[in-house]
Structure formats: structure tokens, C-alpha cells
Length: 463
Ligand code: GLN
Image (cartoon, rainbow, N blue to C red; front, side):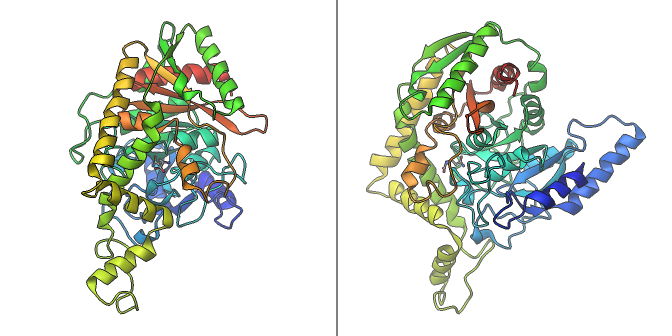
């Protein structure tokens, strides 16, 4: 299986401007050693671990020894991490074969994978379109059949949105459910690691392997891990499904609206009670997210200074005569435009004169957004909404307008700010054949209910 997947990658994933460009590095040696180990286990007739021999890919913001870790940035060129991320360790311990590292937006900042220093990723379902971002490589690799499953990260939508654009399943676990040890941080109060797969059952299996306490990550919860695959056997009859009007506003594409309405009909037919709910602070989610996320990014990215990791501006070059000049020159050469924009914005909202007006205010609004969800979840068991306002857009269509690009995140950032779990599941396609995803949001640490609803949707849409 590993060989077959590598052959497919070699044939279709070229970075030549025509290929999909999802993998940035292949870890053939490590993959083949693991595959041989699993073959030997199988030959002996031993019981096999849950992901035995399953070929997976890893977003290049997670560390994996033996492979580079670039985070899609030039500033990490040449960096070789000395340890494995916990998520990587757990997949491998469960038998997975790690194929390599996947392209993404630089430091996971973006919604289209056009911010990678290593070239854009193409959407396997329409090669002239974006795969979504920032985990564009992770979603595209699953959609193209280069890997059976992949890991991505979601800070404001980066698993759910590319899953929707590429027609695969993507899970945002509850904040704290999956360890982030070995994740190159973007915004620490928002970043989460989660799986992509072609179907809900596979995604549930991966989540079960990834979830749970980790001594190496103090933000990782010690709550017991649910039986996610077992939960799928429970019918959804009687579940209360909330539909927030705020997510169905003017900007929503008509075909997406229709597909979600059909999905809701399917849930009614399966015995769910579908009812309207209010999430009144939704309109503040985007500005709140872009204050909090940029503030945290400006702090996290200060460590890339040319001393500790990767790129260093050449000593003695015109711009790097002194230590401070070396820092400045390295950061100038190493970071792309979007990352610089966010460092500037984040530094601004945290500065003495503006802290109260922007950062503190954003934190207060974040609490209101969280309360909206807690109030809603007193009355419903899961919330169903769109993932994106439009299907996958054309490469280059939004790159000149950062605000238009930020608005892409309108349906995903509120769940990120609130820390609740979410999933994107395919629920149809447009007349032009572009995939449409639907989002299910669940209570904190109630991945089971969210996954049950997701499975019911998958079953009823029969894609
Ligand atoms: N598109 C959002 C951003 O650019 C979300 C990115 C993410 O979830 N990593 O910040």
C-alpha cells in the first residue's frame, strides 16, 4: 500500500505548476521500515493495531524526525526537528505508515494555500481552484488518493474549510482534546490538531488514536477519551439539531444553502428534531478572531530570529552587519507578506496605547461568543451550519484583497474562539461539480454526538 501511494504521488503530485503539489517532503525510509514491521506482524498472525499499514500524511507544521519542518515558510528552510510531535508518535504507534510532510499556508495563515513559500496547492476536484487553507495539502492529499488520511491543524477553520473545498471529512477536536506537543505554534489559544479522512468512520478512528492526555503538553486535557467509533452505532433519532440563522445570511451561495436544507431534511427523516437557534454575537467573530490570532502570532513568531532555527541572513551581507541587523534581515527575507502583515497587526493590537481598545475588547467579545454557544447547547445537542459561504474559488481570485480572504472564515472562526468541536462532512456538490461541505458543531468534549450526526449525514447524502 505504501508503494502504491508513493507511485500515485510520483505520477500526480508534481510541483511542476500542473501537479497538485501537496507533499513537500517524502519520508520513504521511515515509511518502508514501518510497513515492513506491520507486514511482519501480519505474517505472524498477531493482532494488528487500529491503523496497521494505513498510509498517512502530516501537515508540515508538525515535527517529525528525519524530515524537514518548514511550516510552509522560507524562514524554516534547512531546519530539522530533533523530536516527533505527539500526534505523529501516536499515529505511528497505532500502526500508521507516515508518507511525508504536507504543504500548507505559511505558519498556517491563510484560507487558500496560496501563502506557502513552496508553491500553491491545486484542488484535486478542479485543478484551477484552491484546495482551501491553511491545511490545503492535507485535504488535497486525501481527495487525490495520495494518503488514506492526513493530519491538519485548525486555528480559525483550517481543517474544516479545506475539507469542504476538497470534498473530504475534516475534524476540529475540542480545544485541549489532542496534544499540540511538536506543533509549530500560530495562535496558542486557538490552535488544534485534527484528522482528515474520506469518511466519518475513518476520521473517528484517527481521533480515538490522537486524543488524550499528554505529559508533554500542559494545555492537553486529562478527560477520558470517548469511544468515537463505538458511538457511531447509536442512532440519531431524538437528537435536537440547532440551526443558527446568523450563518445563513446574504453572502451564502444559493447551491450551498440548498444542499444544507436537503441535509436538514435528511436529519428530520432520521428522527432528529431540527429547530432554529440564535447565536447573536456571530457578526463579531471575524474581527475578534483577527485581533486575538494576530496578537498571539506576533508573540509566537518572535522566536524566528536567525539564531535558533533555519534561515539566517548571511553574515557580512549588506544588511546584516550587526546582531540587530541580522535579526531584521533574516525576518525580512524569511517571512512572506501575509505573515509580516499579521506580525504588524498583532504587535499593534498589543501595544500600550491600543491594548484596551483592541486586545482586551476582543477577549471580552470572545467570552460573549462562547456564551452564545453555551446557551444554545442547553437546548440542542448539535448545531448544523455551512462551512464556507462559497465553494472553492479560483487560484488568484482573492490574493489581492486580504479582507475578502479573511471573510472566507465567517462560518468557522466562532467555533474556534469558543473552543467547541466541529466537523466538515461532504453533503453534495454544485452543478459545476464542486464539493459542498456541511459543518456540525458539538459541545466541548462531546465529539461523540457530533460524529453521530456526521455519520447520519454521510449515510443520507449517499455521495
Ligand atoms: N484562515 C484563517 C487564517 O488565515 C484560519 C487559519 C487556520 O485555521 N490556521 O487565520
